[in-house]
Length: 90
Image (cartoon, rainbow, N blue to C red):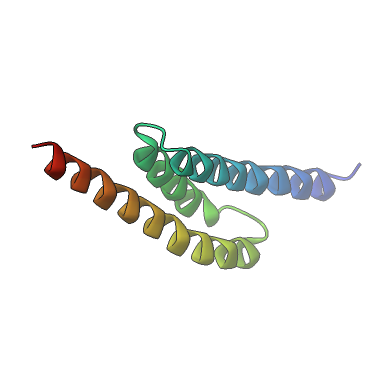
């Protein structure tokens, strides 16, 4: 196998790992796991930080643009719901 094929394969796996991490954290947030807002924020931040180093940069950027919008909305909604619960308890 040529070096460029190995590099492309490695880049593909890296992109998929980043996507898997984001989707896993989204699932945990939907399951109301404590601290999952921070987990999703960190997974999104890792994906943004590492996106420049990927070979399929433009394709990953498009995915990132759409998933960040959804992820941020999920985080904001979850934090708002938990602050409403805290207000009701007091």
